[in-house]
Image (cartoon, rainbow, N blue to C red; front, side):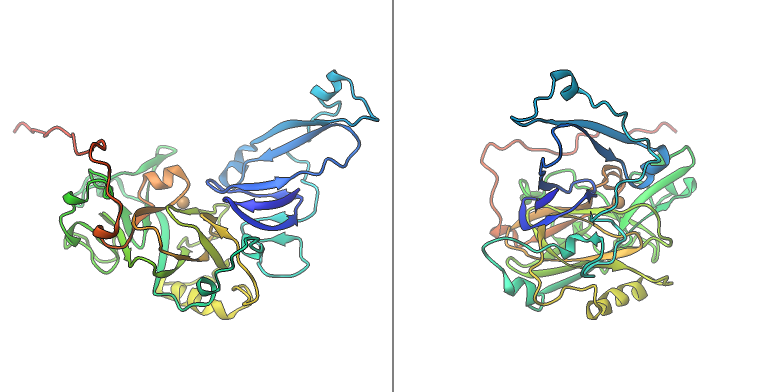
Length: 361
Ligand SMILES: [Cu+2]
């Protein structure tokens, strides 16, 4: 397969044999039909925790040329049975193997950070400029004690896995609570900065070192160069790679790697900060690819950079829908309200339609 684009951004054509795509990512490739005309199996395998269930799907790729006519019935279904789950994938170049080392020339693993952008414009200022805003986003899931879920801290949402595990997602120890109205189209309902929170401005009801449930917002000025380190705060390396998606913009991927075992969140963040001096960070002559979704290695980090040139409120979230559903997201506010586009006059409006709850004593 000749890879030519990811998430809509062109990359220097790159030959790969196996392509790993996490939720929300897109890859475009050109397939060279250079084998003997006939029918071939296309094999697609689920990754991560789905490995346990040995999920696999197949498609049939058929082709013929003028010299070799292949009967219809042969084109429809290959003679050979599909490979079994235990048959290994053919070796070759693997793109986006989530725990691969990046920037190692000549090895069999390619990271998305290794790909070269193939766009007319190279935004050197974005690649090299000192960022106006730098964020460290540590994310995780944790199991909540059922007693906590209904305490005065109030539960917001969680998912129950195999009956016993009540899972809540956080970014920077905050589990996202969405407002009752869309911030972008009904900004007049925003009651000042007090309705938002972040890791330095937590509501008084939130206990230190505990997950807090509130409307998590990070704010940047219009046209800021923003650098974000997305850090998987899990304690152990698992077969789980959170794909992070940024709305409204595309970013370049400037670093990716795994973390040694650390005790505290600030040790992890400091390591990621220092890691830019190591070989896994962007070489300066490299023109990094543009993406809008990228997976973060398990107990690792991915560093992204973008120009915040699209005013509005944009969701940044893990693209596992169930992680988004349990709070692993935050809102990026780009620019001030008066710099944002306004909704058309008769645009539909939303609000809270929850009925009042009366309790009988
Ligand atoms: Cu996730």
